[in-house]
Length: 247
Length: 247
DNA sequence: CGTACTTTTGAAGTGCCTCAACGGTAGTGG
DNA sequence: CCACTACCGTTGAGGCACTTCAAAAGTACG
Image 1 (spheres, protein in one colour):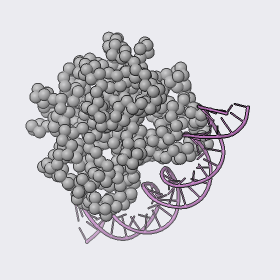
Image 2 (tube, chains in turn cyan, brown, green, blue):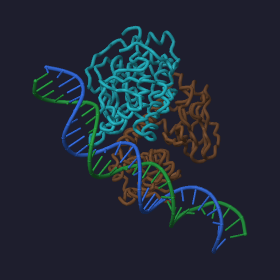
Image 3 (cartoon, protein in one colour):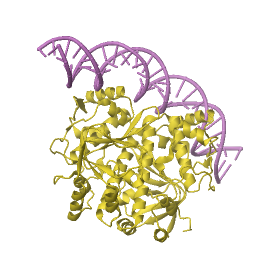
Image 4 (cartoon, chains in turn cyan, brown, red, blue):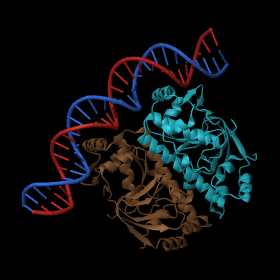
């Protein structure tokens, strides 16, 4: 794995890691495996042995209801663990699936125990990362409960843009949307028909343009103000960082 | 603090603690402080020093929007940390407030560091408990996104009943509801008017009776089936345990 | 250039909201 | 024990956000 190991990039945001920790993390994330899009990485209910880590590409978590409806619970970017929760709790309460073609590293149960039971700062940094995941869930819940669809969609775009920028997968005001409107609907908890109408509405307001899988934001500050986006819940060191290299 | 320390009761569910760990936890939760209902325990945005633990009574987390609307993000029962997240991340992204009169213990930053940076199983058990909190958030998000109000309300009641039973605060099919319909509305993300109609609907179906602050469930299995309640996400050792002593 | 899939648009229906009034339920003081 | 007061919960009527069903238009790919 190259020097810009996304796990190290991410955990550095916790401010906890030392140089030696970098070496340990580099060593345990050596064995990269390629998976095609739509591969199920973790199955709901099944006992979990080890934890997959996303190195490149994007994955997502979701839950299924009895009638087949689906709620997407989170997006996993490079540097994110697919299911550290499941590995530590013993079983997962949701599915995790590759959204795009992706590269993953599977940490074994032994490696996880070694990292999390040892008196290192790595354990705390990994804990930190699950706490940030939890903070994102609280933000989603707030939007789902209190905001109408266009503000909630705008908020999701603001969050996704920023998270992509952190790992160098977005420009300052644009990025490639790696999924279709049907999945956006499963994220927001609305129908794909309404996603289409909501996108038209935001386009008409000049806040957001999504076409040909590409999101372009005319004025990021205005979009943020519109949906009350406050990035502090992501606990980034540089929450207003801007440009970076593209995909 | 008595022998039935709720923190120990809760963390025992993780299956990680030894007898020595119990002694350590007993020692750090000695200094109980009483707070009246509606006391703000953790403020959104403020830097967090130490973490309050609920010993008796009930607290809850919430977020405020600019216009004053509120989304409740979780209920905290005896044995739950109010804001371990905030203590570890450095600042909290939401408010935590006592719902009823409550007893709390404040763990200092030093104690938290000692417990979470040491190579003990306590650190893992505390991490385990934040992961269960996260699993509850995923369940709430799924209900909020995919279920109509009466199923979501029923699901919340099933979860709350079970969590109260674990700490001995509910009977097999009934419990005292410690809050009014307006707060139930802020939990579910609907208006209090609609909470009232939804409760009438569930009462008419014979699934649930809430009156004079007391919830009575004629047939728990039927209510669970109605809202697709599957308690595995709570990661309890005995998910179908039933009776216990009342408050 | 056709085929399959996504997105858009329209029309009608439903769940939930808003506003407003009425009824119930404590708690307080006479 | 009864008034008075202050909420809380219930009910009704009308409106809006989102859904459902269906068809048309746009897009990607062999």
